[in-house]
Image (cartoon, rainbow, N blue to C red; front, side, top):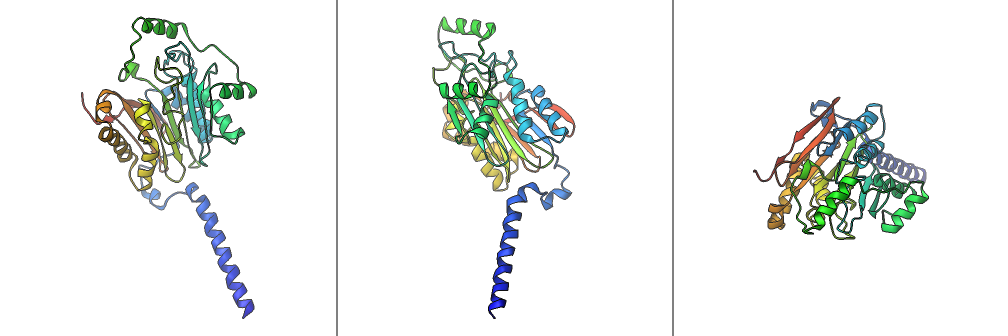
Length: 330
């Protein structure tokens, strides 16, 4: 009898171990409903605004069988290095004191995250954020501490204020009035999320923040659950637009949780935008927020408060730009 009980106990423990292992890896495996769903396509990359150069760089990595984390970092770096993108990295418009300060965060398929805020003199904050994630016990490094860490990791200190950005700042100083312009130049923060051929989801978000902002201001972009959130069992979402509205509603976390409840990514982003409009109607009418989302089946969604938000999508070998639907019309 003792041997029989011991056999049954060991069998149950072995079964539990098998279930635990299966549960641990179930997010790598195809869902049964995927097999007959023609809308399921991966790898895929989606990015805020017309960032086709970024999605092309990310898509090239995925097409070669690469990891989603590497893809989103590479895509974000494209925008960070572009001096004509005045809202990200090199060429970003400065704060009201003339300082270019950068924020970025990154998340991998395991839920690991790294972030930098108020980082100066480093062209690629997204890569510093990845080093924070992979080489420190922390999630966020800020200001001088983030800069010191970046330099210790071999990043070069650079002047990020371009002549164009300096002239814009000097023109702004004449009146020193701050008022966000909806869809200014049809770009803003770059948020980019991807799923690779192994069904690994990752995301990245990078920005220079509001033009001529108060010194020390940090927006939603480097904050996990606000500017970006990734859960490999469900999906990922990222944001662009007025960060204060995203921060106060933790929009990307909300989107992923709605997808967890079974919502299609399109429905999930619409819920998050409507949440902003319901809670902050006056500010929502006067400002822009846009969300994009991607679930682990390769389905995507995009939605914004105001018209004019677009996004780039690399999927099925095509790299295209689409206009997102919006809560309000012109």
